[in-house]
Image (cartoon, rainbow, N blue to C red; front, side, top):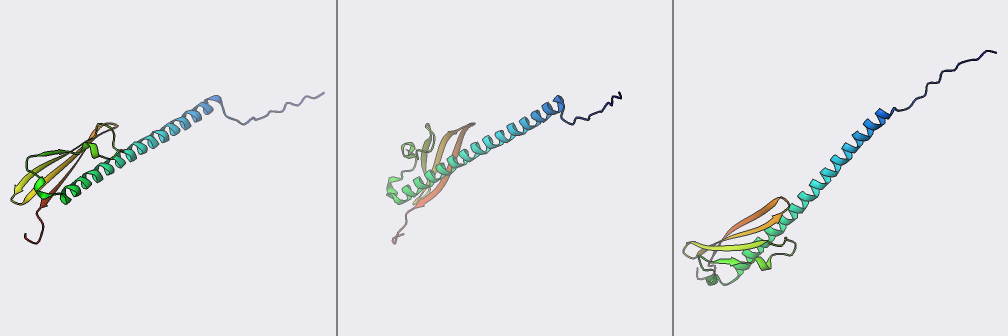
Length: 135
């Protein structure tokens, strides 16, 4: 009886190839996950910056629409309690009033708030003068 030996060529992956593929895919997934986390943090920081800027602009407009004589040079106005609720706790809002020349007040608005990697400060400045028919 003739026995015929048939060689089979089994195709497949070795365990080393599978491990290398898994490590490569894992590194890719971790990298994408970190990228999404950074995008989320940046988006959140951007939203806080926008909210703080709007709060500062709103305070300037409020001062612009208030009684001009109430803006006394050398005073500080703390408006921290009226900051928007979407800013983190411990956020502060301060207005410093100065008088660079007669009939003009300068208001420097500073809003400071904590972010994930420290604190951020938004600074706005505006000049407010007496406006009217008599001026």
